[in-house]
Image (cartoon, rainbow, N blue to C red; front, side):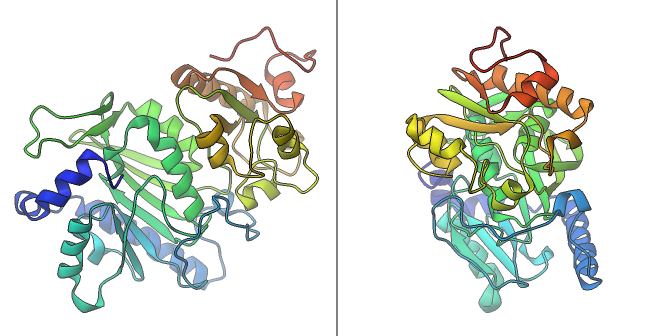
Length: 359
C-alpha cells in the first residue's frame, strides 16, 4: 500500500487533511474499549478472550508467512490501530498500543500528538503486516481497508487473522456500496481510491477471513463492523485463480497452526509439491501469490472428526463456496477429500472430475 495513490496523497497533504477533518466514531471507540476491558476481566478470572468457539484450544504455531516481524512478550500484547492516520483514536485504546499506517507523514502527526510516551509506531502496508503470528490482542481499523481494492481485501484479512490471537476483538469500518477501487468525483483530496461493499458480499469475505461478525451498523454510507477472530483458517483467495483448493473443514491441529493440512502425516503438501502445484511446503500465501492456487474450506468450524459437522453447516458452506466461485471465477475448484462432496452433492461420487459445477 506504500506506493498506492491514496498513500501518496496523504504523504503530500497530511496536515491539510487533518485541518479539514475531525475525529469520528467516538461511540464505537468507547464500545470497543469496553469489549477489551471485559476480555481483560475474563483473563484475570482465568477465562479466555472472546467466546469459547472463537478462542478454542491454542497450540503455538510456527510463522506461516515465512516473514520475520515485530513481536511482544506474551501477556503484554498490544491493541493495533491499523491505518491510524494522525492518531485520533489512539488515546481511546488501552495500552499497550501499536499505531500502524502506510503514510509516514501521518505517523509523524501521530507521533507529534502523542508526545514522548506515545505508542509503538510502524510504517507498513495493510496487505503484508510486518508482525509475528498472534502478537496482537485486538485490532481497530477505521476507514483504512477502504483504500485497498476489493480483490486485495481477502488476503489482507488473512494476514490480519494471522497476527491476532484467537478470540481477539476486531472493529472494521468500510464503505458501503458496490465499487472495486475507484476515485470519487467529489473528493476534495483527488487521487485517492476507495472500495465499497454490499453487506452480503462483505459478510462472506469476513467469514472467509476467519472473523465472526457480532454486528454491522449502517451509518452515513459506512459499514461499522464488530467482529471476533475465530480459531479457524482464513481463506487465501483472489480473482481468477488457476485453482481453488477446498478442504472439508479445519482440523484442530490445522486451526492452531494456521495452515491447512498441517499434520506431519498429511499427504496434501507433499502431493501438491510433487505435482508442481506449489513450490513451498505449508505456505498457503505463497501458493496463491506465486502459483495462483487459493485455499478455502467448505465449513469453517474446526473439529476433531468430520462426523461432528451438521447438515446445516454443509449447506451453508456450499452456498458460500458457490458465491465465492461466482465472484472470483477460479479455473477449477478441487475438493480435497470426498467426504464433503458426498455429503452435500453426490453420495456416489468417485475421485476425479465431477459433472456438477461450482459457480
